[in-house]
Image 1 (cartoon, helix red, strand yellow):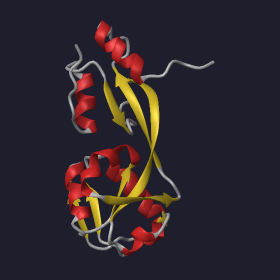
Image 2 (tube, helix red, strand yellow):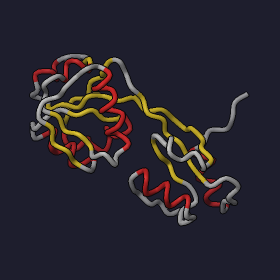
Image 3 (cartoon, one colour):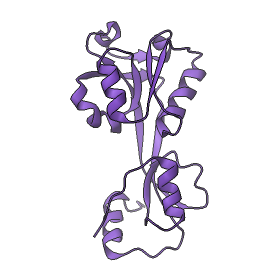
Length: 173
């Protein structure tokens, strides 16, 4: 059988290294150079806003549109935070007052309550659907890489191999 263990990137990568899990699906696994890494997807970021926010009527945004906006950010342990921070810095944007939360539901709830806007990967959007937010593309688009990481040479059980065969597309060629 396959057991799914949810956690933040650094914790799940540590679990792969210590052998307590067979593999991990992670974003931005650059610090896992000692592990075998297979890219399975990329994920674009979008801006999430309350439905009554003035920018919510637009069809797309630029990073500079977020200048001075109250902002809901993820904590520094999140793979999301570093991507968003770098994009804001690259655009020369300083957001307004910021509230930091540590999970997707909290970020969605704070955004829905009108405390600010946020930027999230598209794969996170379904987990925020309860919040009735507006999601707009933001230019220039940034992406994160989603990878499977595992110990090199680790023998997988039949159930893990079957699960990985669904996650990892076969090589084309």
